Length: 84
Image (tube, rainbow, N blue to C red):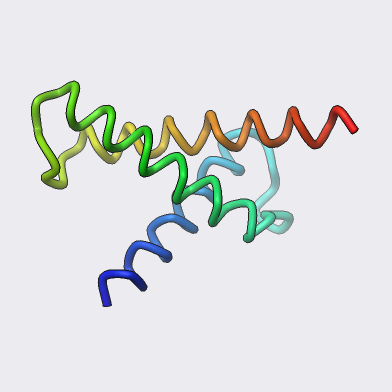
């Protein structure tokens, strides 16, 4: 059940990152959203939580870090796809 929750959370954060970067809600690349959400959430959320001193608990700093991390991963992926 935890793995399913992580996948859904990752997709939601990745989709939110795509919408915040200007993609319309109808054209969300869901595989990209899953990858960006999971990768960005792991790196950004973990880093923000540890820097804020919250440890590994679910806190707002981790959620904000997850969104910021997913935004960075999505922006870099969009830039990389635009190069070719």
